[in-house]
Length: 412
Figure 1 (cartoon, rainbow, N blue to C red):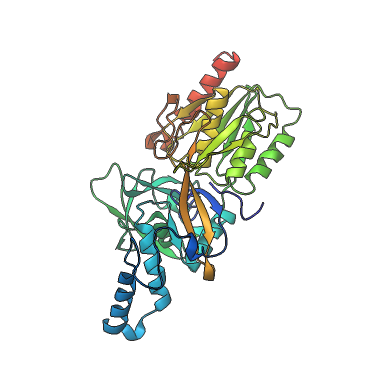
Figure 2: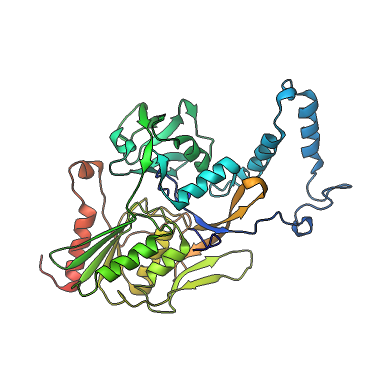
């Protein structure tokens, strides 16, 4: 798959989230041109190098730079490159968009590791909820789960440093680290009145992309944890392995799936949606023409009765697939309202190994519903409490099975 293909998570922005090391949602990413735009293409600032600028007094930047160089008490140890990175980060942060982020070389390298394979971290999906960095889900068998992190825990500090003013990507960078090292999180649980310290030893996190089973009722239960680069391959392998097996219905579990590559979401949707039908629409706004992604029409599961499981951790590519299946096929969504990561980020390669991830568009479902910020409301709302998880119960899955039985006429 080309490096210039779309990626949907963070992440950031809960944007893997898989966190897998720290947890970031993949966002709708795509690679931009690997070059700096020419000055002629920048319309918001004119006469940048000479004379008086129009619209923006860019001389303010150089006046400040000059004052720091000449007057700062520690000027002998100034790092000009670090100052440039800080200035650029401040510019991007001023957008007020948690998914638009400047990544200096080291952070850019970590970001690319996140979307390309396993890495070291704590194994918890995290996201930004109501202004707080929140644990979406600690992964099974992860250091985070062993340390006692729970769904809904708010992370207030990392190694004693307040993180309330940091971006999601910055938090992820702080949480991640080499296997065997320790990170201390200050968290506030839903059930606790006071915050507590949680010490976690990082480890290498590996999560199966896809698992499946066939129940006694001949229901195919598929769990997809992310839309990674190899998720489409794994899905195709499953299809081949199922050849000749009787399947009367399907439950597609997209809970806590933070997203990934757009093309993978489109590819998997093509097993369920007739050729040519819309999977998702990219809305650029500003009077620009929308771009529509359509099904390739693989036909395998076009007529099979289905139920899709979603929750607060279902984001980005997961929401695209769930929205397409509901709009195009009338398939019911069961669970909790999805995260609402419905924007696409362009990933631009910059000189020196830096990258700029900037929001350029929003995603619309086939019927025109904006996923961004709103998320998808389930057709059948079912909670999954901490008590349920602790006792091994899964009322959301139970309801999905019940709905599917009714659809195929299987007695309870």
